Length: 465
Picture 1: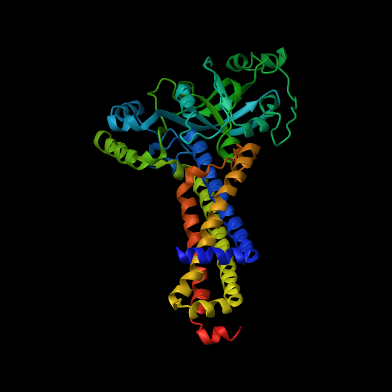
Picture 2: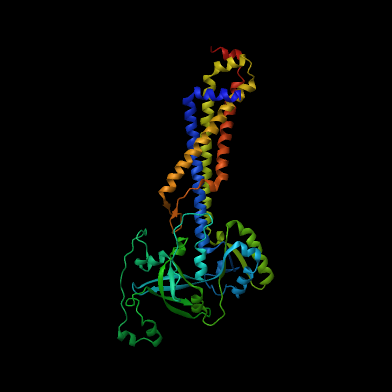
């Protein structure tokens, strides 16, 4: 207690040096805490966006990711409904899951006659009610915009498209007013005349009988290859946009009800799915859920070559962004620790030089070498602890103003703007580690000057009187 009192009085006595050191520690630790919270916010927001779109786990044919885009139906899951029922019948797995649903995807060509615009697309079929459930997943309680692309009373031929595809097809009325790329509709086509229709086959005349221009609906013609290799075309109504988590998918995305896509691809054949999506209550359940699913597939469906993919492997951009920000955080941590080390060491070293007379006097009064050493180490410890305390208060104030500002940013390759929300309490382990490192660095930086002070002899120190 005596050492603490003496150290504290010495810091007050040399308040200018102490204040500059406290300022360095406070700013450095505040920067670490704010960036740690920001880093966690990025991970949670990206994780939420990807899990809402792709689920935590997907069951696929083992070669689907390699060859599936060339021939999705060939690398599909046969009797996928039996697989879903088997997953839902497992009591332990059922408690972990939010949604277990089939998903069918294939390539196609979309044409919007109103603007005479054509684009190759990636068509996705899903159970719409399950899709709506997936889009409300938010275990981290993030402030996210509500997704209402699919109304409760959707019709059989209703579809949604990505915002990037809406821009290419010039469906400008679907895009929000604050969309970053300007969009201007361009009418280049008109309904076919009677003479033109007379030269066409009957099935084509039936297809073009409802003009996208005169109907008042946003109708696109979607060309899809069936499972047997024959082309099939359908005229479908676009009811809204559904922004996707990645820009590449958003530029080609078409979404529709699973039964509609199956009718276009399969005709009267048995229904299939290219993947089964499993969305869990929490991301922490992924490892255990993977084990349970793997056991079910091996025991009940050994004849199918199925594999389990997580959303990390389906969307590798997630780990790329997370690793990038973790690297930035590590770089900032090293720089700040180096600056704090030299600042504290310089402050304690200057304090030793200014107090040579005091060192000689206290040594003459009976203070041991170890007592002198601990005196200066205690000063560094006090600076580290008090600077950390001030940094926490300052971080809470800065966090409050950042969250109130509701700023957004666009991660690399991501379409939806991510709200910058810093929640310090969700990443308390990193914050506690940063505080511990700051105090430890303050103590470490004090050891060398304290050792130098303890080696001074009484006679040498008193020569300065």
